[in-house]
Amino acid sequence: MFERLAEVAARYDELNSQLADPEIVSDHHRYSAIHKEIVSLRETVETWREREDLLTQIQEAETLLNDPEMRDLAREEIESAKPQIESLEERLKILMLPTDPRDDKNIILEIRAGTGGDESALFAGDLFEMYTRYASNRNWKVEILSASEGTVGGFKEIVAMVRGDRVYSQLKWESGTHRVQRVPATETQGRVHTSAATVAILAEADDVEVNIDPNDLRIDTFRASGAGGQHVNTTDSAIRITHIPTGLVISSQDERSQHKNRDKAMKVLRARLYDLEQSRLEAERADARREQVGSGDRSERIRTYNFPQNRLTDHRINLTLYNLDDVMHGELEGVIDALTTSHQALLLQQVEGAATA
Image 1 (spheres, rainbow, N blue to C red):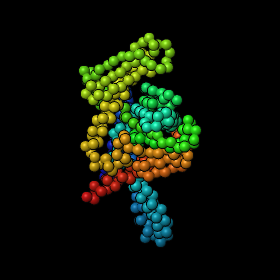
Image 2 (cartoon, rainbow, N blue to C red):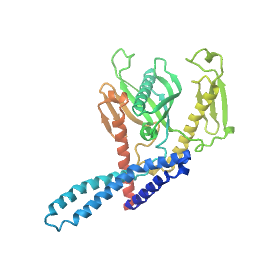
Image 3 (cartoon, rainbow, N blue to C red):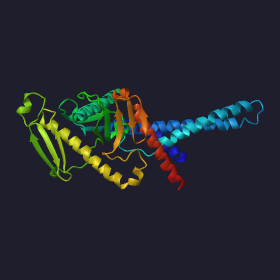
Image 4 (cartoon, helix red, strand yellow):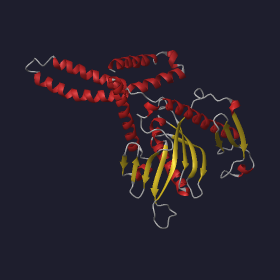
């Protein structure tokens, strides 16, 4: 691993020297790509170099062990450096783990009411508010692409684009079935009801990643329904796109412009097709997938929100927290960090197992 780290450091230095090239500076695309790679390598290289500096300090201290006047000071320096090196090496193991190529991507967030009727729609709305607040805390941008409101509030379905720094890396753990246990506002007997909503996290697909044949699309226009002004009764601005090979149907009606609705619908279609392809590839790597957090099955119950007990339970890693109020206000860091740490531990087991095999 440490031989590889030397190569990584050499690559890091090479990239930094390239940024001084006027030809690259004038090419925005190349400059941005190089800068992005530098940022991705920086923590690894700095951690490795800190370890190398400590090893050098130990070597220098060891030369003083035969000096009676310096022996105690040298031993103290060596003993102080050893645990620091161990900590840095553990960090380097994490930093060198395989990464998900989707981690840097923006996402399309889809939340749908499940079992539980009106209460499920209200819970879907609560989940959307939770993710919106989390996004705001991280300076991410949220844009609603389409929404179908519940009869008493919340959403039967809501689809949104979330843009920002490494959005997919943080929210990819959220795909699955979320279950809620609480007393609905309409419950007169004070009984706790159980309902559910499903969440899907789709990495935004670039045009070059998903090639869509226009002949595979059926595009229909229709009149928008719901709030939005008088235009919804007079203009066929809403768009419905059917991808014939897969049967996927995407609708968008939030914009007054037919063109804008079509663009939004195509973004969602690309993300879903990209997700389908990723799921197919993951199915081919089923053995490796079992080593990761959760199965990725969208029907899997991943989490329970118990409001009477202010308790959140993530069933994939047996995590229980008693700060549900904070979580619903967007403080998801404790949950996401625990899932990330668990995932990294399992990957380490896999890598170390392969190394000893």
